Image (cartoon, rainbow, N blue to C red; front, side, top):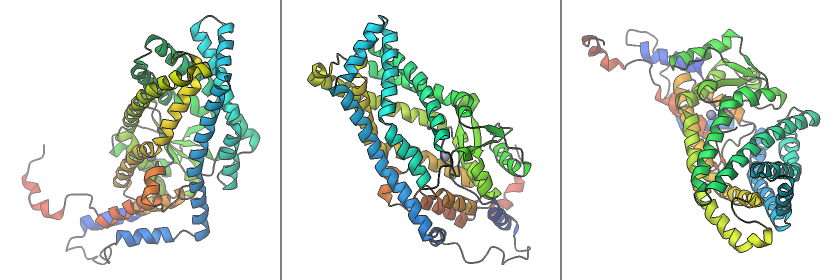
Length: 446
Ligand SMILES: [Zn+2]
């Protein structure tokens, strides 16, 4: 579900860009306003530094601590997931669960469904303490969460329900592939995984997101119109911009694009609406439009397919090797045996964990593309910088290059501000350069 929903990006600065562009375009020698935009040229590095230094030390330390804590959570999430898998295999809980489902029914599909529901529930319960810390306690510690425990837990149960339904259907189909193609399942399985991801993306805005939040058309024309103008200029067929009540769950400023094909929807959250100026909002929404125009849904789905194909190919080799060594001990008969699901999960989550930098980089690079599209569309370098600072409330602003490579699924605040300042320093004009004017009138238009 999160492939496309991103915490937002940043770009904005209509107010500063518009006068600048106008000056660049129209201020010929006859226009007697030389001083307006001819002060010292902007030094992008110094300007970036000045933006970063505008953040108070205590705020910076808090957001750094929050984000760096997230590095460790990647490790703990993996350790907990791996431990659950190992526990289920070595204690033979998994084998017993399989035996139980075999006694219950003679239909293979029903056996897989029965095993899957028990497995997904068990994993949820065993990882619940870490879940509570990571997504409830810690979010409150840093002032990012707005829900009390009952409301939070209610949404957890809804999420669990969706996981049980979607996860069981997925596993039933996957195990049908395992039974029919025990040697080449990794190829067909990739197809199944990609189709499921596609369906999830497609139905998310219609069936899943409304279970957690209310999306309604943004009615204030002073905000929606400057956004729709950018959409029209970029051939985006939207008539409405949506507002989502994210403040139900969080204080984060964010926007997102969700859905694919006919269900694509661009939405901004109410925190953004409350905390940001129109230039900042334009910057953010232009970034989101970049995801749409640049076809990032299809692109990320393709990347995902490639990652899954490689992951499944390696999983096949490792799974067979593990079953040869330990299959008897764990009571796992082979790939088509549901009792091997924790082993599959163990292998696949290990590969995912190791691939963290690659996955983050693939996403970060597409986010950077959306940033570049956004700055050229919104033309709001200062707005983009402002929003980058606001996003700095939950993402470390100034990481080392290695940190950014490993952990960042969006460009860092520093990288975004630098992009904005580079753009501002380039001082692009909106029309053709004055030098080409002499040639232009002679060409007939077509
Ligand atoms: Zn984005």
